[in-house]
Image (cartoon, rainbow, N blue to C red):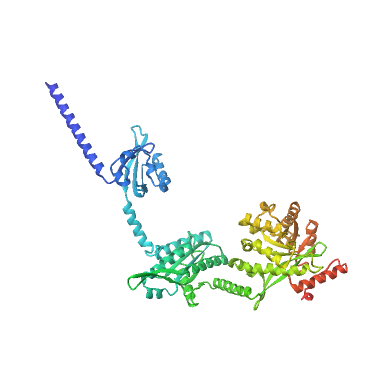
Length: 609
């Protein structure tokens, strides 16, 4: 009887326990199925083995289709490496859990931001068998946070950084420039007469111009630079990683001029006419730019802004559509460059250039030719050295008309010398710039000049520098070959001082190598320079090229070069560059000296002039 009672008792308890378990499971399933967070489990290979229905709500993928697939396949491709790095310490049991925010792909094609909380799952023996945790959709929270951030740090009209973010970035730039010993620049840019546009066509039209101006500003700078809007029609540009000294000024000026050119392009603005019709209105404006440079934290942000503002108002006072540097010395560099460029354009228009000729002689002192060297006869400054204006001419593109003038004038003189017995054998060297040789019609231009003056092409020798081979070497070699085929000679100037062109040397259609004066100057006292000079001579012999040394100023230098196989020279030992009448007087003096069998001679410059 007792046994029967006990059996019934335990049977009833078992039924109650199972009912309770079923009821508990139903409650659990009700919670799991209706909770908004994704509850998941993965196996040791990272495959989903459990997902609740929230998975479909968050990602759009069906649970049944997702089970058995690898969780990493659902992570945004750009976030997978980061996700793997975050989970790895968990799997290796270096941490108990991980929590992070990451993007999960959505079946519709977009993505959702989720917050992941995961723990390591272990079996009874403590071995890792997978992970479990939750995924919470935080897309709206992220969007709200981004909106708050955007409102706090970005201008709502142009989407440029606002004053607050600009100041933060400027502080970062000050720190980096001090650490890396690099310069930076702060530009304050104001749209000239913007108020007139607002007052006449309305603020909505003014806003169109500001949006377009912002776009143009961004196009003028590098990705690492900052463009910000302070408010109204005032913008700020922060340049970083600039070179030192005058180079930083030059780099900044180039960007500022690019900005002014872009701002000055016409704007097509939509204007409402008669309160109904929308018409397109073309509008032109200019900008005034104030600039200050920095390279450490010696000046505060407030002080830098004050300096840029002062410089900007100086630009306004100067008539607008210009730029000013706060530092007087920097501004002096810019002003001098601007004056020089203006004068240089006048020099081209008014034919203010002259050619000087420096003789090239052989080891017996006989003149075998000359190098044509440009000089600028400035109406106020007198004779200006090419070292002052050629770099500017290169930067501005003015070297093209100047180079054409040099080539034409030199060939005209070469044609005259060809008719005179004592100079008929002369070759004339003419320097060619990088911009010239890059012209599509360079070959045709040279040949046209030669044909125009009826000159044998072999009398002309074009001097190129090694730096020309830095870009488009194949194109340049092709142009040289085309001219070489017609008989034009080529000399490689300043050999050994710049780009190492040895790999190209055997392919270049050269006639001559020129030993740079920097090696010749110390050839008697510096063993390295002496070795370089010998090497260039030996290289020339190996390649079948003539070698000439420039900057020869002493007999001992000439003798050293001659003893090592260099038999052509150019330098003050023989003659400095002279205008045509002086050069021809020098030729007569040399002729008289040789007629009297003089072994040594010196040029008395006072007699030449």
